[in-house]
Image (cartoon, rainbow, N blue to C red):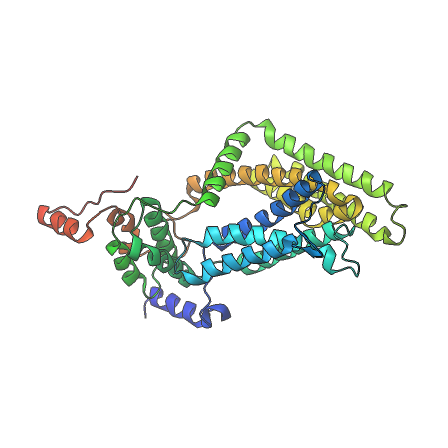
Length: 397
């Protein structure tokens, strides 16, 4: 038995439970779920702002009140209808967007359903909503962030991309994305057959717009431009320490006002201290190892987002939303800088030439897949190339 065959057999023997029951993870799931959670939070903030600006009007009359929780339920039903009706990845961004708006409208009225007098303005409502979003985010992290993607999941992702391609064709971006999935899968069983399927998909330059991807690309581009100004990341760190100081001050001042809920103020102060400590560690390490330093900065922001902001929402209700916006901006800047640093490390030779994970050798057919994918008529072009005695492919640029 060859080394490659032995490695393949070992992988097959250690298949994760989810794969055994036929549940491969979507390679783009974190983007869709992140969209869902971000839109949920934005919907709550916008809904509260619009209601406050309009004097909290009620839709209905004669004893009826059509609460916006009903519209939220309707939008979630529409999202389920979309996602359960069509195969392939095309509608998932829209499902995440519509479902996020629906869930935001739903969870915004949680105060009515945890109080016996249907109090929409119940003080802990903001903390409950924030804790719900954070808990869902932690579930996403547990599902997608703690276990490396199995090659079979990458292969399933390529097949999933092909589902849309076989009926509607591939745009150049969609074809490149499918080939990247296949390269990541390496030499797992079925890769050669999927490569043949991807080559057979025709070209089609018309694609359903993806507003989520457009916003994401614009945001990432803006953040990457921003971090090229070398002072900006340092300003982000100063802002992080400053917001932590404000949090500690707010917690100490509110200690007496909370009475029996002293633990809320204590949690805000302690978590802010931990966030500052992580930021200081990052400052000490960033001169020796920039990537490691920015990882500590990111941990500091995450402590603020996942822990400190929960207590702040309980301390000052909706005023803490400004702190949330600052933390999200800081997270974007720090993450963008990390991406720049990691890309620089990759360009120094830390990854394989094919783009596949280290230790997985992409088959020859997969490694040249992007060049095959650029041909509008794969079979005829291949025959022409063979007749001319040339095997050199034309690469997609």
